[in-house]
Length: 366
Image (cartoon, rainbow, N blue to C red; front, top):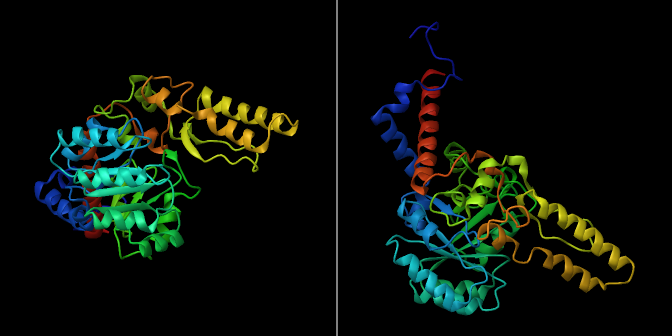
C-alpha cells in the first residue's frame, strides 16, 4: 500500500473490518482472555458484575443480568434474614446461573444473613459499607462461598487481602450512591499495578465497553456497573425514576454537600433535585439551632442523618424524584432510553470488540 492510500493512525476502522465475522471472533477471543480471570472467578460469560442497589437490585433485575451472561448481585440492605432468604429463593427460581448477595457489614444481624446465604448455596458474598471483620470473612469462606470487598485505597486493598478476601472492587467517586473521594482513574493507577493476588473489578462512571476495555488492559479482571442497569427495562424502579435518568446529564449527578466539618455527611451521589437543595437548607437550620444551644451536638448530628430516611424508597418505589434520593452515577448522562438488560450487555461487549478491532487496524497501518 502506498503512502498516499495508507490509512491515518487516527482513522476509524473501516466498516468492513468491524463487521467481518472472523475479525469479530478474533477480537472476542482477545476480550475473553483479558477478562478471563474475572469470568472464571464469577462463573459468568462476561466479567460484568452488577452493582447492588437498594430497592432496585431485586429478583427481577438480578436474574435478568445473570441470564444475559453478566453476574447479578442482590442488595440485602436492611432486610431481615427471613426476607433475604425469600428473595434469594425467588431469584433462584428465575435463573439457574450464579449470582451474588451484597451484605452491609454494619447490619446488626450480619452473622445470620451470612448463614442464610450459605444455606441457600450462594457462591459469592459482597461485603460493603465498611471494612469486614476477619471472623465474618472466615465464616463465609469456610461455608464454601467467595468474598468480594471494596478497596478505596491501596493500603486497604492490602489489608483486605491479608484478611482473606477473594476479590476486590475499586469504586471511584463517579459512582452513584455512597462514594469515596477518589476518582476511578486515580484508583486504577494506584491499585492495579500493585495487586495481582486477587481479581480486581473496577467501578464508577462506567457506561461503555471501550472504557471497560481500557481498564482490563491495565490489569483489571472485570467491571461493576449499576447506573446503566437501574434504568433497564427489567428494573422495577418507578417510571419517573427511569425518566429522570434518561433526562439527566453527567453534571446532574452530584455528591451531597457538607456545611460544617463538625457534622460529617457521608457523600452520596445522586441527581440534583428539590430534596438535595432542602438538605443544604436543613443542615444550615440545624447548625443554627446547635449554635443557639437549642440542640446538643449529638441531637444535631442525628437530625441531619435522619433527613434522608426513606428517601431512596420514595424515589425508586413511589416515583417522587423531586423529594426522594435519586442515586445515580455520572454515567447517567450516557443513558438515552430504557433498554433490556440483554441489549445493554451486548452493547457493552460489542463496544469492547469494536475497540479491539480498531486497535488492530492502527497496529496494521500505523
